Image (cartoon, rainbow, N blue to C red; front, side):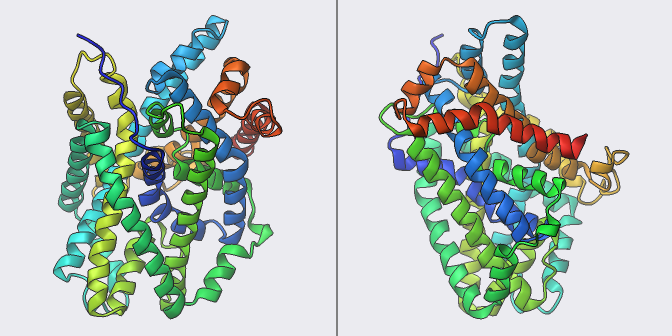
Length: 459
């Protein structure tokens, strides 16, 4: 049987929407506000922005380059270069890195699909009026009711996985492209409307101060680790998504321009999400350190306060957030599906179903860690994981450990194993100052910086 035909994005704008959509749904609107709230506000934002510029953009360029240069999914792409890396020990390391780029996104999906299910539940709830006439404290209680229901969580998780599998099974143009072209621009528009509303009715001045006036005394090694983890999570670095998306890029698209554009748009959405949520948090007295449920506690209050039109916006927002979340889950499932269906021996649709079944099996334990298994702390004997549930452990390991490790190793891979002539050709910058700056960051700054973060926190 012939190898599966390799597809390409129909345009650079479509790739841009897909790459931004890989993170915007949950990486920014769900995760960014609550991680900022839990980790010192402005101090966290300052470190986060620095890491996006110094680590994020160079790694985006590196992962896009590996994908486009080989036109292969992560494992095959890294192996293609790794086979010429010299020593057998180095080749084994790069082989392991390739597998990590397949397995880490599957790990992320086990909790990501559960959270995507929350968005589906809230979209339905907004539509049928569940959140109408909220009284003080009811929004937080309703979110807790969802978490306490194993049946609801498993049902919505199953639906989110099912939607993801159905889209990935259809391939690039028939599945992913059609999804992002409509849903991502709509999400941007609604997010901006929410920011405008929050700035008028909420405590915008306090929110601005909270996000941009850093208290340097709050900067700790753990905060830096969390900021780095959020930057990697938000930009989908170290997860295989950017690399596999890069494999669908045509040669006429500028990697540096795309990387800067994606990083800028992604960061802008993260900050907008903060400005849509924190003014309401402070104005209504909601606990800004409410954790992963912050968006689901805060936004129903906003929509309820808007009156009849608020229900319409609520339905649209959570529905679009759900589909933005799905664009993220698609990008995370794509590396494994693309890899296993690459040879053409197994049809893409069947591979997608098999992967979905594995995700569902593990996802059940993640969903139950919010209720029946909430007192199970698998790594609680370690100080870094004290009090973390199964879901908390998986999220921390995926977003704050393995994504960073993947990024560190791929920077070493690009900086030291891939021939400089190849990187020069792929980047299209010539032997310019910009190329030399990128090469220095990838070769020295990123691996040393990430390594230092791990040394400080873990050791």
